Image 1 (cartoon, rainbow, N blue to C red):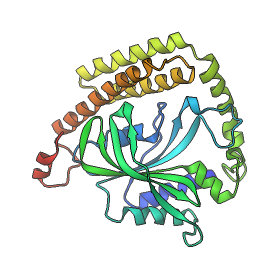
Image 2 (spheres, rainbow, N blue to C red; image 1 turned 135 degrees about the horizontal axis):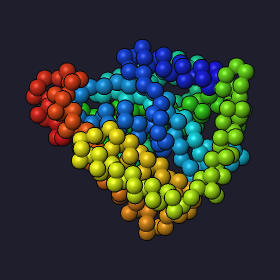
Image 3 (cartoon, helix red, strand yellow; image 1 turned 60 degrees about the horizontal axis):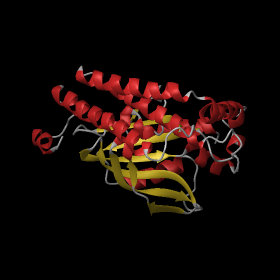
Image 4 (cartoon, helix red, strand yellow; image 1 turned 60 degrees about the vertical axis):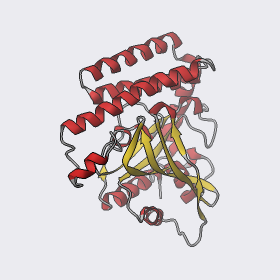
Amino acid sequence: MNFQDLIQALLSFWGNQGCVLQQPYDIEMGAGTMHPETFLRVLGPEPYKVAYAQPSRRPADGRYGENPNRLGKYYQFQVILKPPPADIQNTYLDSLTALGIDLKQHDIKFEEDNWEAPTLGAWGVGWQVMLDGQEISQFTYFQQAGGLDLFPISGEITYGPERIAMFLNDVENVYDLPWSNDVTYREVRHRDEFEFSRYNFESADVALYFRMFGDFEKESQRLLQENLVLPAYECCLKCSHIFNILDARGAISVTERPQIIGRVRAIAVASARAYVESRRAQGFPLLAAKPQEEARYAG
């Protein structure tokens, strides 16, 4: 199964499970968890199921296209099930079968690996899923996001498409993966990795990015005052990506790092609280539970 067919198979599987099939978000982000369909939708009492693929940019992980397993931009396939069904683990295993993985022939382990995202004020309990000793997924029950306790909690499944595709195609170098039947991962992504590694490590204008961070931080705060929650959160995503670029450039000192993370977290938390209040003002349109369920939500 080539890389694009794997993404299509996951979309088809989770679409059949009743998930909204979303698209990648058109702003840089370090993880699929930051996509509004995860970070914002897990907030509040409304049920929601969604699946999507998201390019994840982590500038400090770039290796100029020379490392067979380490990338500055890679893909995550994200599933959010809110609230999580009782058989979520079995459904996940069914999804691996749908990808052509014979669970009788391979070793699957769930190893405890709790998750935390300081910039999002988010954490959860969960497991990393190991396939023949290699991590292929993260399985998390979100407990908090944007500094808010979640009710109901959400089940999150994050797949590593490149790792799964490498396993299925028995290749050891990500660039040797067949992206389609005729084109390799190298032909699609290698130059991208090389040039952005040079940019992120050598060329990005540090002074410019520090100014941009402050500007987007202020813009997010201003937009929240105008109750424009989603544009405000986009500015938060910009701040997060700028932080990652400055970090890759070595422009952030050990003492500055927690301060800047705290500034990103502050606008993420403010965006989360404003989003819940916005949905409350709309009457929680997707809420199917009884009215008393809303009262139990500590939003």
